[in-house]
Length: 139
Image (cartoon, rainbow, N blue to C red):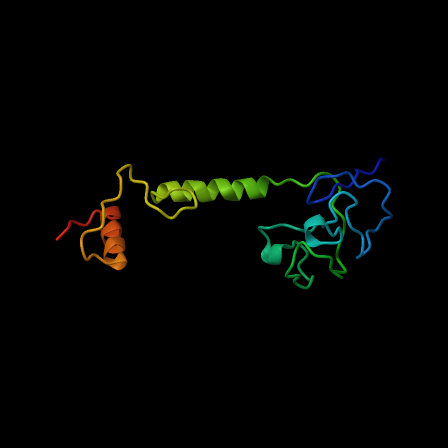
């Protein structure tokens, strides 16, 4: 049975000719990314505790740096960035739900924000926007 080729987790370059298992100092010849990193491991899973499905592995803080994990196993096949796109999509939908421009933190209720009243502080303007968002009547 033919073994599935490895691809870099960062640049998606095919990693032909690298001796297996990957060593701690092995880097991608195309982009220089560390290959013995959590992102390249078969156990890596953002949704799991500590982003690792191996229950007894010690936590590695930097998932993109080379490490000494005894449970490292190179994940064959291409790395999918679907989780990254899914997160961005979810954030955009959440922002839309709360009436904000994606990433801006500015309400987009369809109306232009009212100009600040004379002497009105930033806190008062923020409170007025909050009250408008939740439908509280103006005093």
